[in-house]
Every structure is written in C-alpha cells, then in structure tokens.
Length: 341
Ligand SMILES: Cc1cc2nc3c(=O)[nH]c(=O)nc-3n(C[C@H](O)[C@H](O)[C@H](O)COP(=O)(O)OP(=O)(O)OC[C@H]3O[C@@H](n4cnc5c(N)ncnc54)[C@H](O)[C@@H]3O)c2cc1C
Image (tube, rainbow, N blue to C red; front, side, top):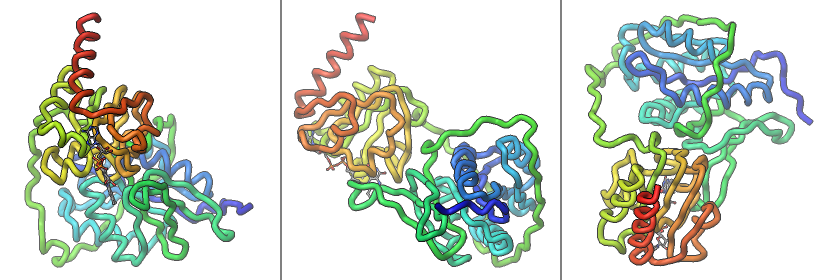
C-alpha cells in the first residue's frame, strides 16, 4: 500500500471562480471533493481567488475549511480577462507547484483552465464526472473519470508525470461541504505582475442577460427530449407535458445541434447536471454523455421505442413504445392524476 506523504508540502488547489463579488457555487462543490482527495493524498488544501476587493470572498472560502487562499488582488482584474487571469495564475502555479488543480467547467473555467495548462505545460481532463486518488505504480495519482468510447463506458484518465494534474468538473456533480466552525487558514495576498500584453483583448463591461425561463438546474421536474422527438414534428407535446408538471424542458446534444433547445438546456457531460425529483426522458437513447447529467435525479421515467436502449438501465420506470402513441397517453394520465389531487 502506498502511504500518503503527510508532510503537507503538496497542495491541492481549487480555482474559486467569482463574478461581481459572488463566488460560483461550483468552486464550493469542488472544495468538498478536494478536501476528500487531500486527506487521501496527505496534501494541503488551497484556493486561488482572482479579482479586486475580494477580501470577503477569501474569508468565506476559509469558512469551508480551506487552509490557504492565494488572493490575487488588483483593480485591473475586476472583470475576467483571459490573458491576464491565465498569466497571473500560471505564475502562481510555477512558483508553488501544486499537485492537483481543479476548475469548474463553466464558461470561465473552460476558457481559463486550458490556457493555464498550456502555459505550465501539463495536461487537462475536461468534464470529469468523478475524481479519485489511487495507487498507480507505487505513486498516488489522481484518477479523472469521464464518459468515453462514445459515452458507453467510464474511462479514467491520469497524468502521471506532469504537474499539476488538472481537471474541470461541471456544476452539480459534487455537493457543497458544510461550513466549519472556527475554521483557521490564512489569506495570502498576491500582487500580480501585469503587463500591457495581458490586456490586448480587454473586458470593459459585463452585462447580464435576462433569463427567459427558469434555470433547468432549479426545476423539480425536468422533461428531456432526445432525437426521437423528431417523430412528433415539434416540441409542442414535450412542452405540454412539462407545463402540466410545472417542469423545465431540456434535451440531448442532437436537439441542441438542431437548434431546438439552447445550450443552457442541454443535459449531460458537456451540458447541465441536474438532480430533480422527477426526470422524464423522451426518445433519448441514454448515452453516458447524457445520463451522467441526471445521475442525482430522484426518479427517472424513460420512453423509447428501442427495448435495448441504455436509457432503460438508468430508468426507474421505462415505457417501450412509439412517442407518437405514448406521449399523448402520458399527458392524459398526468392530467387525470392532477385533477384527482
Ligand atoms: C465528448 C462528448 C461529449 C458529449 N456530451 C453530451 C452531452 O453533454 N449531452 C448529450 O446529450 N450528448 C452528449 N454527447 C453526445 C452523446 O454521445 C449522444 O450522441 C447523444 O446523447 C445522443 O442523443 P439522443 O439520445 O437524443 O440521440 P440518439 O442516440 O440518436 O437516440 C435517439 C433515440 O430515440 C429513439 N426513438 C426514435 N424515434 C422514436 C419514436 N418515434 N418513439 C420513441 N423513441 C424513438 C431511438 O430508439 C433512440 O434510442 C457527447 C458526445 C461526446 C463525444
């Protein structure tokens, strides 16, 4: 058995994403998993926070049991700037050489993490669905699980030689840890070396778009349409079912590609991760890329005409049949149930 190095010289880092003075929830979710990994590895747990006037956020991070917050503070870093953020964080990595560095697979994380990985010359595994420390030829290595081989299998990716071992994880995959009372830890303020070249492209203003529909992650019922709904000619019946159950409409990658749903409605490894009370899958085969997005759902109902479709392996109840026949009946039955309640 390989014993963890208890010297705690090694560190696991989490990028604590913030926008306009708010920490992204995914950074906190990663802290829970990182704390588990740090116990197994015998490593320290630290966060990297970049921004301006973020002292309150740095203290908030300490309350989750983080031992150190590297706080890069500069007025020029008030808004996210790819080159500047990547430059200062890569400098920090070169200086402190963390073992592992985790990012949320958000728009910012997906933009920032690859730039940092390229600058420091290491690998990056995108959209992990699990992270574990395991013995690999006598060394404790981060196993980064992703759906692979067309989404039919879980595959572990490792980065045995280069450091840090870097990974991104979608929001919702891990849970936010509890606050720790009297948590210690220190905030290390970092003065960044910023150059003109970091600001060739510059964010001058950030405008928040108005969300038209409730975010799919917040819905208690999610009705997800797969490629099979093409047989219906439109999403009208899918919307009808969703409205009846006060749910949110979502879908698979082919629906996004066809322009029938927006990016923020796609469920799966490269989309949203949800955990509703009821998840209804209509005409989706159940590729792992898709099904990892609703692993936390409390109850899954699936309809598909192919009895061999993998969706039935993850469904609590499956209906084998043509959506053109099944969906109108399903709506009718839910309507009756609702009236009777
Ligand atoms: C790196 C990578 C990341 C990916 N990330 C995602 C992701 O985040 N989310 C995602 O969804 N996909 C993702 N994909 C794509 C994923 O692998 C699948 O291709 C996709 O999920 C399939 O979508 P689908 O089930 O709607 O279509 P299909 O696999 O084509 O399935 C259609 C289903 O509809 C059924 N059907 C057809 N007609 C009817 C009918 N009349 N009545 C009932 N059933 C019917 C069929 O039996 C079939 O099971 C990713 C792929 C890769 C390579």
